[in-house]
Image (cartoon, rainbow, N blue to C red; front, side, top):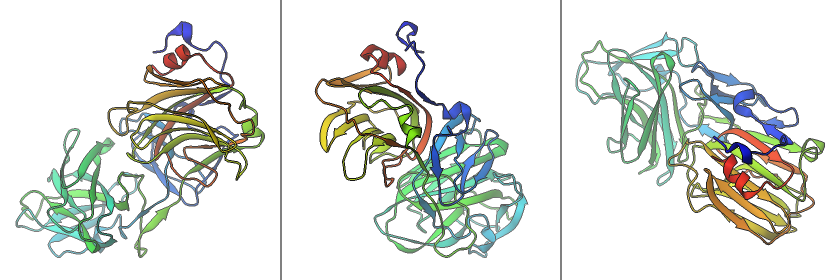
Length: 404
């Protein structure tokens, strides 16, 4: 809770309250070249149309805000049909129950009578030494645990328990599990591919099978990277299917109507699934080639940072000495302010950093939300709950109060 007597008395010039409004300000231009999925307030996987923004939710129904992700490809060719995967040791009943998207497309997997190491797999093409993330939705029936084994090797797998809040036990990698309504879980396993080439992405029994018991699966995904992104459905297309990047921007009078060139304050609440690389919440910039800009982002160590460049000359670079949160996907709050010889940054109710030398650039006229522009890179790869802009320099005490 903020300290009331320190809270700004005037309203912000821009207030993008994505988590509560669940819609874009009309001044924002949003594009994505493909459809994209997100989870609604009821825990159902929904599909957004081309160029439609996504407002994602946690498993408990809480809105996380505007989802901004870089482009990714699901390498699993049949993400919803284990009937097209390889194995004679399983009985697959396709379209057995309602899947996480509400359609009756989830499969019942029943391993044949025998040991606990039977698997069902599909071939994927991967590169040795590269990081990948495997995900799948699963739901218990008689069987309440299974292994996700995306490399074809038992030395690289994660065991998931599909009861309660769920558990993930990885070998040679990291794992996590998120409980969704109606008994579904999204299971995640991140690893570094040991061999490369054609490998077998598979689900494997973790219990001795009686030939009758089984569990439900849907929505398999394998993507290059160190963090999971939203689900990308595939239908047998060779090499998988790509999802386009989310690009949100403000230009012309849609930007100049609220932005003050000489001084201002940016406050934001966001979260990221990525560790490593710069992850932008907001990037303001001028004409191409002028190298005039301001950036509000998490650096490669997930530390809140901000900088201002005037005609190619660095004016201020502020980077916190402590991370934004204790772990990935934890919301962080931070504020950064600029003025002539007067720059500051604060997060988590303190961690104040100041710079008393420099001049903000007077020719900033556009902004990217959730990425670095104009050619988008360094995506937040997560959710932006709120961006608030005051067209004046708040005091350092106000910056700290805002971020409590």
